[in-house]
Amino acid sequence: MGLFKSNEKVEETVIFDPAGSEIEEGSLHFTVEGGENSNRLTIQEATGAPVEQHSPLGYSVGWVTIVFLNLSMMIGTGVFSTPSTILSGTGSVGLSLLYWFIGYLIAFSTLSVYLEFASYFPSRSGSEVVYLEQSFPRPLYLFPTIFAVQTVLFSFSSSNAIVLAEYLFDLAGTTPTEWQEKGVAVAAYTVAVLVVIFHNRASLLLSNAIGVIKLITLIFIGITGLVVLGGHTSVENPTANFKNSFSGTSSNATVYGATNALIDIVFSYAGYTNAFNVVNEVKNPIKTLRWSAPLSLTITATLYILANIAYFSCATVEDIENSEQIVAALFFEKVFGQGGAAKALNLLICLSAFGNLVAVLIGQSRVLRECGRQGVLPWTKFWTSTKPFGTPIGPYLVKWGLTVVMILAPPAGDAFDFVVDLSIYPSNLFSFILTIGLIITRGRRARLGWGRGEYRCWNVAVGFSILTTSYMLVMPWYPPTTGADGGDVSFWYATYIVTGLAIIGACIVYYYVWVWLIPKWGDYQLRQTILQEDNGAVAHVLVKIPNSEIERWDARYDTAGRLRRVPRNTGASSPSDGKSVE
Image (tube, one colour):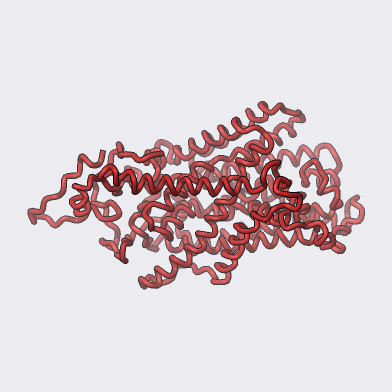
């Protein structure tokens, strides 16, 4: 990245918002714009990415797709494997089950925050990109720059692709070398990217279909667990783990283990906001999202808890904690014996992992595209164009390239786990800032008399979200009982936290150099203008305007980068800025 002059063709088209003017509050300028997906207008700070009145990605997202976009991203391989680590961290069956419910409450509170934000900006996709941009519009471009760089750097899905490769080899009954596993992971991820590149609606339908398989799989596990508890199988004493279920909590649980267990659970629910990345592709988004998004989360949480009950019904605590295989495999073995059941489970897990890759690609491509539409990334058209297939090819290719690098480059073990964990702490930080941003946005809207949105998050949910995200920021610093090098990796336990914060710090330094120092030295200022394509794609492009031309530029363009309306036959001359936009 770097400071750039735009070489892209910028259409000098007079684009007006429905209100025909900007609303000013101090240094802030707000536009009123509408999209075809909603009868609600979007009032937003003018330096944010412009509303696309007609979505170039179409309107193929209905309530079914919303449910399965969220569900498919939440249900990957975690529920089949993480219960053992969560049990070890909490120290007891009872507390581990309670943690799954607490994770649901945490996710639901944050989901409510997203719903209220979406009601304010119903024609903007990209979720966090938009909500941070609009909550903190000053300093100019600071939050968009930091979040865009973070999003690009961490837009890889290498761990999910490698997990898929591992289960594909298990399904084939062979033990791969490290490079064979890496090669299959690259091939699997490449197939997933090709699926989403060529047809937008087809990729959504595929995500829905795999989501149905995931749903059926977890329902089957849950019902089977209830049958086991009823004593209708060969499993002996299936209720043993539920007697004195909290026994061992005080003696086995540690602050470090319990915190890591909660982090694992929160990330097992990660994906409950995936549908907010495609809001501008949903007709009447808030009316649909306000019930379908919570439904997807509630279904997933219920199935997670039932699956854990099923696991605990058929195996001892020691078996689960010490198992070298995934917990779901242990469950199938105890209930159905060895043989075909294990292969069937591996096939279902492979489909689940592949569906997760597709769902993540769909959601994250919109996040990257929205970052590109803000104008803070170079080569705006690369990020925002949907030609020739009506899909965001640029973001898909970036995710593919970074994922391939992250599959092939880091060696297995601590180094790979460290790179994967790097995004965890910044993600928690942005979640905390986002909730604070909702309070700021509420206050601003009340001050300007804009009223409430179509959805209002309960104040108790906002408070709970702030409390839990604060916990997730503070407690990871608490050292393990075995010492500073006794965590999940062989080096200092907080290395990933410090490195994540250092990357954010580097982004801030980069921002000040890019936005303030270099323009000061170069005797120019940054301004934004509109890039518009025939299919409805609209974006901001940042351009360099010499200080000698600033007054004339500002007379011709408004804050959002639109040409101002000039009365006809007045003899007024328009400033010539053709040489400034290269």
